[in-house]
Length: 377
Image 1: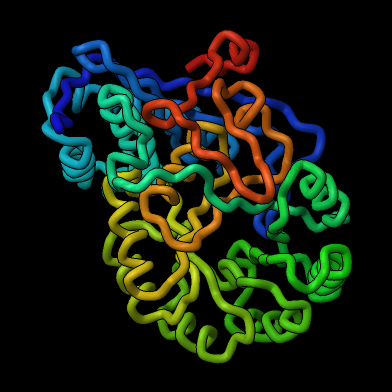
Image 2 (image 1 turned 60 degrees about the horizontal axis):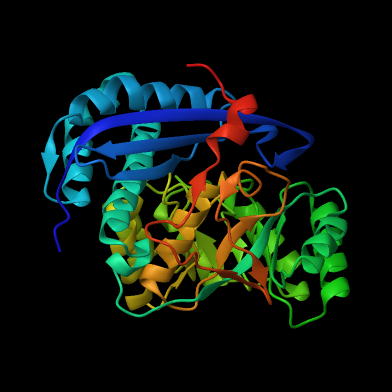
């Protein structure tokens, strides 16, 4: 199969939608929902879409869009590549010094990841295949999904709403104090019974000592995993101490960047679940390989995603490409940029999200409907 292409045009699109209820984490709030979608057009007319993670800081989407437009697009416009992974390597190498000089390795890696998604979408659309079929021969009709991001203010209310929509797995935000965290998890467990998978996400809120104490406090209510209980840059020895003693399986990965970081955590940290974010680092070109290695190590693969619908579909195809028993993260909080203005967005049924049957990601943004939310760059 010919996966070569020449890039004719790269166009970033930034949108922001105001929300009534902020999305709250242990480290901050989101008072609107942003998205940075990237459109790529090849010299042969083929097109593809990607999305860059851009939730924080509040100017993140606009900043990363300018990185795409002023740094990445000039580097690869009119350049021919034999494969999307070749473009990923080229852009990563070409921006290494800039990342050091600017102190922005994260935003640059995120911009490259979103562009990588768009390039894989382009070659898959041209091949008339669903994107995951570029990596896997078997057909996948749907993947298990869970409702994520249940905030600390009466999370059972939102969980019941998502349950009515077809979700049967949930993830609760913790890191708001022992009493409140335990109360929220207890109420969710009482509402949904002992068999319902309920995960907890601390968003890097705790020290090692606090994480150990909270793991013990939350364990009687049976969470399926404890996500990012420590800072992502905590010493490996701290992760090892926690995973040896925690009664709850430990998950991490959304804030890892680079093959070496993922390798260390998979091989030495004792984690149970790996959560790469395809729009933060690696795109398909690196995350599929990382996901396969996780399964080889007996580690669950549950990709992280908190953003718009293009990136969510990329995460879905990532999970479908790798296989295993992982579940797809779907943010519970309202976000029209995730579903309402994404053409072809699939439904949830019996706790599973269907894989769009069309070529590539199987979805595109509805640019006409989104025009009122567009941010000028």
